[in-house]
Amino acid sequence: MAHGRGNGMSSKQLLLQGFALFVVGVGNFVMDAPMWLSVWTVAIGAFTVLYGASRWMKGQ
Image 1 (tube, one colour):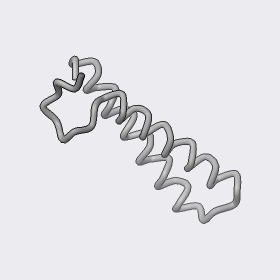
Image 2 (cartoon, helix red, strand yellow; image 1 turned 180 degrees about the vertical axis):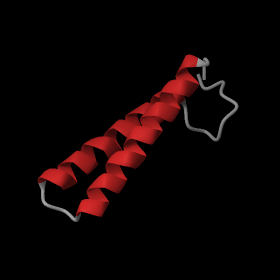
Image 3 (cartoon, helix red, strand yellow; image 1 turned 45 degrees about the vertical axis):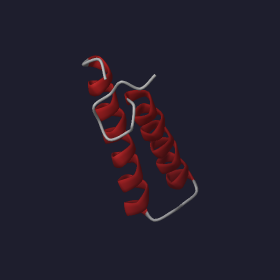
Image 4 (spheres, rainbow, N blue to C red; image 1 turned 180 degrees about the horizontal axis):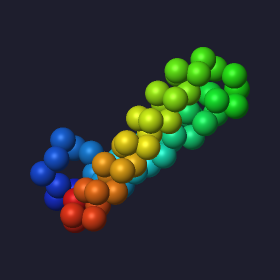
């Protein structure tokens, strides 16, 4: 199944994990968490999604 030469994370896992972080960050924002925490979580999530997508485009 996994024929990647990465660190165990497939691109789909990266996309899912990044999306989950993004959702948690937005949730923090709505739940009145500290601003830096929300921004940080959303930024990491977005970066993870972009990284996973770029790896997916290259064919894992």
